[in-house]
Image (cartoon, rainbow, N blue to C red; front, side, top):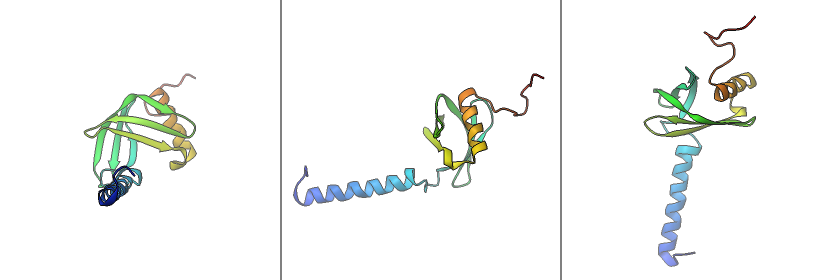
Length: 117
């Protein structure tokens, strides 16, 4: 609408193509660097398994968003990433453990945790 004629059509086509590439790479998690698994290794330490099989040790940022619908994490990695884990991506018990870890930095019943009796 802003650029009339052939130039506007070319710009519109390029924007559609860019959107498709971004959706495939980011939204649909088809890129080789997409996160496939997250392993919690400490109070702010994570091990990310990527689609290409690589494993990447990262630190989670202290600020995390936790709700009953999902957990949003920012991680310090060579490529700055934000991860969103929706509730239906995990079974209920695993999602509960992820929420507790995101809130308090530890998982109940984890090794090394003391229990008052």
